[in-house]
Length: 379
Image (tube, rainbow, N blue to C red):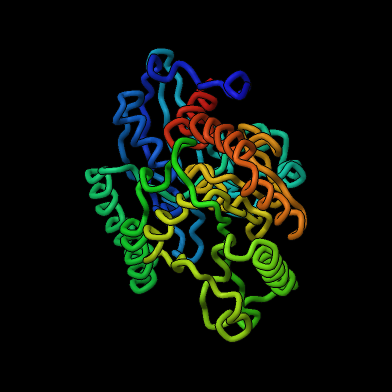
């Protein structure tokens, strides 16, 4: 049934696209890793040719003002067609890189919300496309590409120092780029299938925000919503609920009883955390800041956990259907109900995992997603 609704994009192997990755000072390996993973996979399979080029964009902004747009120049020599394609991984659905939007042919955005997109001009709006849930990852054994990008990290830092005469900020970004690349989990550490065995437990792990460090009315509301989720799940599910609040000074002081009993999610610990995530039958996802689509949504689909998610506001290129690919909730009690039903009904859990796996395989797996995006952009 699902396969009738989700169609594999045909034709790119015959198109043999030539893709140039245009790198400039806005490159961010953590935010762009998903797109790069898909491109590298397609290149290794011979579906596209992939090259990395320095951008000719003369605008070099200070590191504090970098907007993480990834830009591709795609050519289809057989028909003489060339397109500039941008990928915007920012959380905010109302934030745009206007220079990129003006200069590209297609603008793929991670978080798209119809009322925010409607504020654009007709010309701008026609360029915007939604993407599907994504996450930070890297292709297995892609050593050559990792080394190539390390060279570009150094070149980006050098360009920043020369144009902005700001040595220390550029060095900080360079160090962060290397740390991010080193802590990316390879795709095979995320993925599982419906035949994989799972522990009959629910995973929910989240963070709070320190009101002394963050401004805005959202802080208290966000924190209390997450605290109540953990309390409800633990009260209803007991030891079948794993996780809790990520340990930090604020949570240690105010919520010591709600601290996670799982490994921290600091980037240095992420590979261990990602491997653990695959073990659980159910994973609960809540909305990120700005109502963004969280990376944990894509991670959950890759790990083939049963996805129980707070109502998803944003749109996707391929619809993620409540009741088919995931089970939605609006309140902590409703979330606990959904989790308990999946823990106690093997057939429902297996059906959900099978439908979610097909969605991941066709719409989220990096090479499948990038194949679809390139095909759409070149049509």
